[in-house]
Length: 254
Ligand SMILES: NC(=O)c1ccc[n+]([C@@H]2O[C@H](COP(=O)([O-])OP(=O)(O)OC[C@H]3O[C@@H](n4cnc5c(N)ncnc54)[C@H](OP(=O)(O)O)[C@@H]3O)[C@@H](O)[C@H]2O)c1
Image (cartoon, rainbow, N blue to C red; front, top):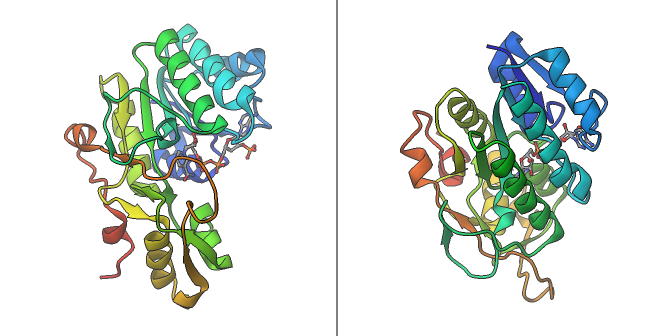
């Protein structure tokens, strides 16, 4: 089975490519710019994948995150490739609590809106595709969130997420890729933790001085945004053999 990993030069894409082994082609923006439908089509025609995992995005670029996802779905459909589209908990906001797959998107940021638009496009173009929403992705010290902890600073106690280990996430996405499931799936970790608690856990794992992790609040900083967003992944977990471990589990030694 041939896999095409879009966003293959990124954090999640690199782990997906590693787990797929030699049957994977990893593509970044130099291989095909997702903003260009012809470039996407040509890449898919060249690689002839059975499965496409789209983990590509650009936080502040609607044309990549939303339009690009639509171009990928069109190409996947045309070439009868199975599509797994990676989405985000950023599609939610507005009320504290748990969000399962039945909750409609309610984004608070342009990034969240672009991810929600991408989901709608992918589901309309390719109803057989999997749309996999995830939360903060945690891996080694080079992961974005871990690098921030190494740099030190303020971490919010009122920003709550369900972080996932990059290896668990990649394994879950590949399981979904070879399944018959379609539609929205939540693929996040089992524990809801604040960014502050997460930063302390990462500092402890990496042997850093915890005094470099300073508690703050989004409210005191006067920032709007998503705040408390907990992805409920129970329904998807029941379909998987891989365990989506919680951050307290995978960041605690022993
Ligand atoms: N990181 C998180 O905590 C988090 C949380 C929730 C959801 N997600 C979702 O998870 C997915 C992967 O995130 P990540 O953190 O692994 O991403 P990342 O490390 O920032 O990698 C982004 C990837 O997108 C590619 N890309 C950017 N612009 C492109 C373009 N115009 N055309 C083609 N490819 C382009 C990049 O390629 P180049 O290297 O060539 O630029 C790179 O391979 C994304 O869908 C994101 O929304 C991430």
